[in-house]
Amino acid sequence: MGEISTTGRARIEAQGFVGLDGETLARINFWLRVAPFICMVWAAIGTIRESPPMLWALVPFALLGALLPGHPFDVFYNFGMRRWTGGPRLPHYGLPRRFACLLATLILVGAALSFQLGHRVLGHVFGWFLVAAAFVNVTTGFCIPSFIYGLMFGKPESCSPPAPRP
Image 1 (cartoon, rainbow, N blue to C red):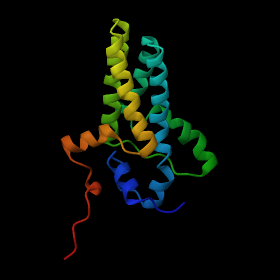
Image 2: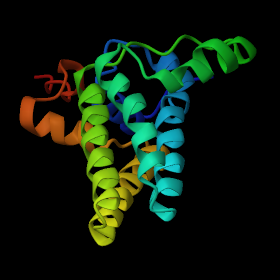
Image 3: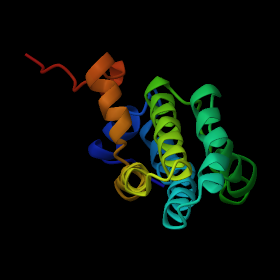
Image 4: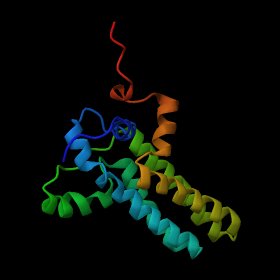
């Protein structure tokens, strides 16, 4: 499969997936985007429909992504597509990626509760913000919440550029 670009490596490592070789990162790069893609589509449909039950139904999955070593939607790859592609298992989530799932949980709660209480505009703001953030991750591999985590708590060690050689 080959190596991954420096930018691709930095984006994946910023999510807490550190210590992996370039070939492994290249092989899991797009598979790490499956869970955000499913969440994005589900949240978009729930927001379009202004459906509190649909958004509430997504909340436990987002929360489990924050609490477990992986996201429940990763099973589609780990126990399905991986068998056909011969790829490696997705690594355990680091704190930046878990933070992203926690933030998604809070935004989903905000959207669902807003629609439930009749605050349609606020529900749309929350819902479409989540969809937009997930869209950035799905299309580019850049995770906005993981970036925020890095600003607040520091990037994982291997995300730092190498020290210049004398």
